[in-house]
Length: 283
Image (cartoon, rainbow, N blue to C red; front, side):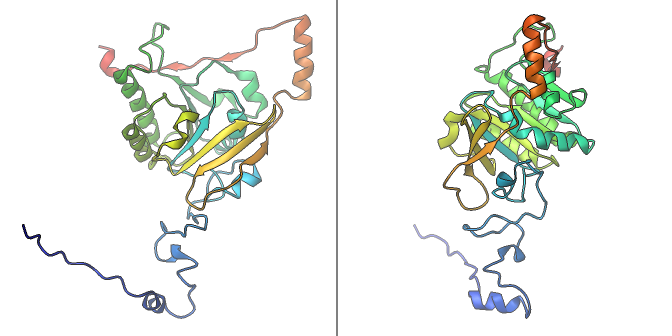
């Protein structure tokens, strides 16, 4: 069987492209973004027109395209288990979002949050929106993460939050073994989200592909040190992990209070999550 002929557009030679740029302009080979803002060289960090949200850690910002956490895309954080310092890592960007008058949403946190602990990190707990899609209105546990229908309904809620444009920063704990197409849908929804969108996932997916343009792996290196490996970014790979010193788990004043609580224990304040009710299931 004969195949039809295909016309091919021939790209002009590189010197011609340079000549078209005109005199006095920079060489496109050193600054490809002059041709299109989505272009960058593999050995360079992508120069983003939109600056990121500062992480609060200078060494990390220097390695992130845009000089901070990116907006309008997903950022994946891979953890061996929750509670290794991820909240302390993200606290500076979350507090900056709140100071700008925008809402911070925590989506399906894996455990009850301590209001006192968040406040010590500078987070305004009165301005947090906490969504728990894993509980029913009666307070009982709903279908587990293995129930695909339930997972789809929960992720739909996260998609709507990203698309709404009303949230300044999103921190979401995703279900294990997430299907790639679901992550791609979240990435598309993040295009409408003018702020950082952090997706926390299990370390086991480190060898799998991802639709998120930025992926970091986090590991504890002591009580107040976090090792950060950049697994994927718009730029060259980073060979060695960054070692970031986190705010202490307990400040000096908090340590004094904790010692006093041994003699007179008082239950710490906790934050209660709003319950997600799927409209289709409410009837």
